Amino acid sequence: MAAPTRRNYPTLKLERSLFRCGAERMAGLDEVGRGAWAGPLVAAAVVLPVANPGLGGALRGVRDSKLMTPKQRTQAGLEIRRVCLAWAVGWAGPEEVDEIGPLKASRLAMMRALDRLPLEVDHLLLDYLLLPDCATPQTALPHGDRLVLSIAAASVLAKVWRDEQMALLDRSFPGYAFAQHKGYGTELHRRSLKALGPCPIHRLSYHPVAEAARNAGDRICASPPRN
Image (cartoon, rainbow, N blue to C red):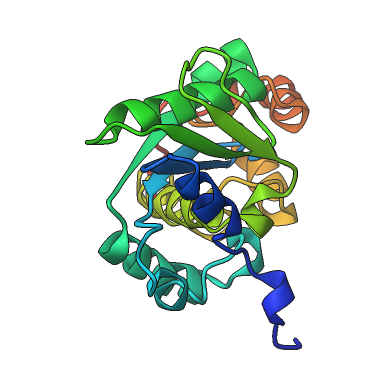
């Protein structure tokens, strides 16, 4: 795979423009897992020290988490946590995604991440979504995780945290290979659903899972399967 150019990387242009206009603490937010068939939908909020002239260099490798390898995300996550002013994650469980839908669940997870931040922020930077229940000034951009460093950093932290949770859930529900596909709709996941039926962390409102539940009948896993 060809090495990415700097055009593929987000910048601090928006953050520093807002800083010059009086915003001192901006929280970048992003979510991961909206399209997954199983597991939580996770959002992260991160506050970067945008006035630090060395910040761009320290986070030089950070970009949209979907464009990074697991090793790159892990390394970047460590560096983000080292240099940021604050960070937090929030999540919506599978039953909440089923009840309110993935869009509202995304906003719920973001609000929970904001609630867990240990400091107040004066501007939010988001990928696509605005948070109508939050009074804090907001800027939402299409492809924000590819343009704005704070949003990209949030996408990395959310992805790393969620992947760690899916690896833990893989131990509780062996046979589904959650540590490999992280709950997304791969062929491996489809085969395990067909063989075992859904388990408690599956999203029953998603069509492939609902179909597997209908076909499984009494075989639906209500507790972790035994080896």
